[in-house]
Image (cartoon, rainbow, N blue to C red; front, top):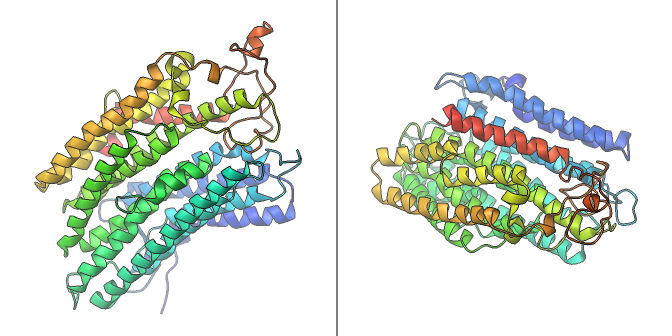
Length: 536
């Protein structure tokens, strides 16, 4: 048997894997060095993203295959939709890497280097998980491997926090990791059982040849189990319980990763399963419809009462998962593309929201730490109350955050979000599934209430003293235990900046890397709103 390799087609997956291995080798050869690891990891993600671009130009029905057998079946198959999801996952992982950048130079508890040597391990785990999320499975075996590769490293990322964090905070991180691990194990069990029924029904594990399955009745069980297992990954109700626990416990960059990159792998799995099963087994479509309706409703209702930005974004992820699943509940040929388009828009807006939340949390910690070394992340540094008056005090942060929230709500002038919702609804309306369309319409109103509530806080009066500007500071590191901000200098007491009290002009109070991320992500949403070609 001849297996045909195509390393160029595999490069979106191979590039981050090779970079992860090289990072670990580099850590052995150059112990104590950190900057080369970061550039190497970033290069691996950029190389993978560049390799995924040619797949966007593929004509409909065509694909890039690798690990192929002579009969034409390929274990790796990437069409234009899969290539778009790969590109989104790799670029989102690069944003997360930049968001976590200061963690490499932050000192340990004794003021020296972090004694655990966790930085290269964190980078290698992030690269490995991204490689799993960028997979393009051609059969159930490849799908199970890529999903677990995308999930298991994130469990360690949640638990592997800095030693300078307070003991209760580290314990919460372990709790969040255990919740994610338990969910992952249950999810894998369901997926494995579904794969077994699939093989029993069809005699193989490929995503082809289902209409002639010798035991089509077993496809009902396979459909239910596979969709349930993938619903855990995408945070769909009722398989969402791990999401708010883990999001609130993990470091903020890891939370951003879980809310964005990890969803790409789940959607990729759902797309191939629904494409294969939806045409022959209507149970799959009914299950997707119920999951979409429940996720939108529960996510929005619980998000309405949240007082913490991270927990609100966690429940927003649950609600947005319903919108991602919505078009997959139809037989439309555009359903998968609609789900992918919505995911890309959601991913961009959510990353922008997390970057701004990280910037505000860094300002709060700067004010609270007063230059104290060895401080852990300040409690409550992500509460919505700390965003009060942000539009007046820091409009360059508030306006991008407002654009991200309007995009998630689907309101003008964020046309990209509005078009994404219309595109997601179109397959359902085409199938005349009116009850699901009504549920979606109700949840549009609920979602608007969720995000407008945050926007009202941004425009409200007060809150300036908690985010007062600080002097320009060196970019050599961050507050110990802070994964989002740079190291502050001591400040004077009072509500006004220390620089103003001494007559000096205030220096930049948000790290340049965060401004770059805010600018790029805002530009992406603006361009998508002016010409939303990618979501039509």
